[in-house]
Image (tube, rainbow, N blue to C red; front, side, top):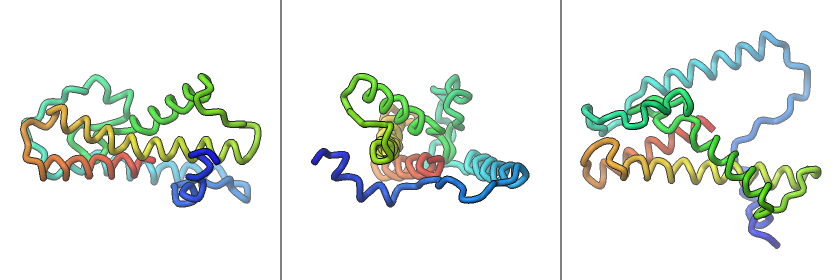
Length: 158
């Protein structure tokens, strides 16, 4: 039994969007999209608690690409999600992971591992971001708290 198959029971706890069981009218799609967009913009306005106000925006040129906002809950933006997708496609293409994407089980394993990798990258990128000194010199407790806030914000984007 492979590692992916052993992780299969955990995949049920990961966020997932089900296929609609009925026709979803265009107006309802627009409504839900607008609600999610408002929530995203609200996350972009909530500052990270404990951040130094004079912190430099070293990754400002990546704001548009990562859909992020320095010093807020979405500091990481869509980075973990995009990176997880890229990594999984590369692993599949290089046959490091061999999933039969023509079957339901293969797709479920692939998508489940991609989500788990995205969650791991939420924490990994938050750690790297804070340890790189982006927010200046901080105490250990503040660094951990910033990492958790950034990881939570990235997880909400999932």
